[in-house]
Structure formats: C-alpha cells, structure tokens
Length: 81
Image 1 (cartoon, one colour):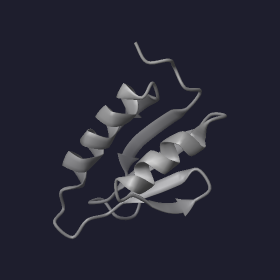
Image 2 (cartoon, rainbow, N blue to C red):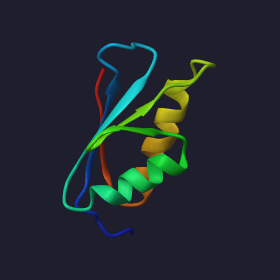
Image 3 (cartoon, helix red, strand yellow):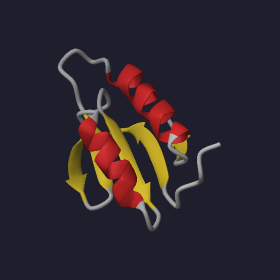
C-alpha cells in the first residue's frame, strides 16, 4: 500500500473554458501533485492551480488518467463537474 501524501487535488471543468479541466491543489505537499501534473502536460495557471487544455478535446480522458496516477501515488483526488 502506498503511503498517503498530504495533498488534495480537485478536478473540475474550467470556469471560463468548458472543454478544459482545472486542478486545484491543496495540502502541505502540493508540489508532488504539481510536478506529476506538469509531467503529464498540465500547465500552471496560478499558485495551486493547474489547467489541462488540448486541441483534440480529450481533456476528460487525460484528466481521468492523471487522477488514476495521482491516487496510485497516495494523493487524494476529488472529481467534480
């Protein structure tokens, strides 16, 4: 079992770009999730906020993939719509 990381990621549609996905990162180890998301093609939008926008509109697929990987690393992930 993977040890829990003090990090929480909330995935939701972007408030002004409905095809994009926004990740809000909180917790004392938020840099762990940020690094993982950056490696998966997410971009920093603000402190503690990452955004995934793709030209092929496959954001839901890649957001679900990222959620699966983060969870496997012991990071709490919440998906809202």
